[in-house]
Length: 109
Length: 137
Image (cartoon, rainbow over all chains, first blue to last red; front, top):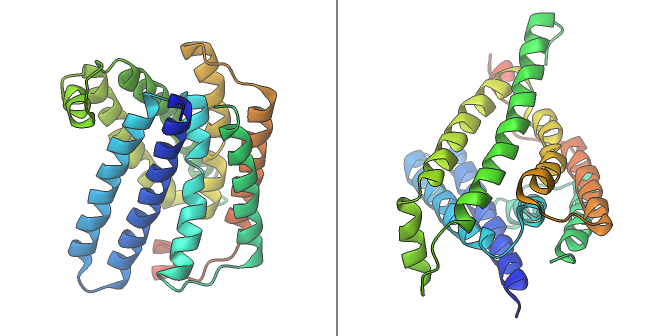
């Protein structure tokens, strides 16, 4: 595996971690145990920062930053499956377009 | 969002600042990460980050970004503000070429355009949660 591909895997991991962080913050908004969920959410944001910093050592920021848009995809999937939110067709079209765009950007690495 | 011209100007400046801070953060973050000394393992590299002054700047950008974002959300819906600030995908690519000498090729430009359209679609879709303070009152 090339350094560029490793960097892309790290960026994707960072977006998934951000997705979980967002879900935990939403859980905080819904639950009486607000600060516990907020704590977990912020810990995940901290982990995301570390992983993204590591990724930037291997991949250009002009690639890493647009790939960060995959967090929209992660948030959409996680909020549907973990929070049981309803996701309409327009949002799925957006998710597909983001996936297509991110694939083009990642293809450069 | 509001019809008051002063509030509109404030919102415009806040959104512009959000894009500038996003762009500055990404470029400085990349510079800081690239300057980390090569260490044999991951945790030593991350410890090196604590001694790298550029990471202080990264932290300041993040704090500035957070405060500005909260101010922006006082004047605009999240979906609107998020869609507008996705323009930073374009500015980060442009500044990375000018400041870091990165190469941006046509497939990448096409990818960024698709992402922008995708973000626009996401922000068009409905939301069932309770929006911020406008509707709380």
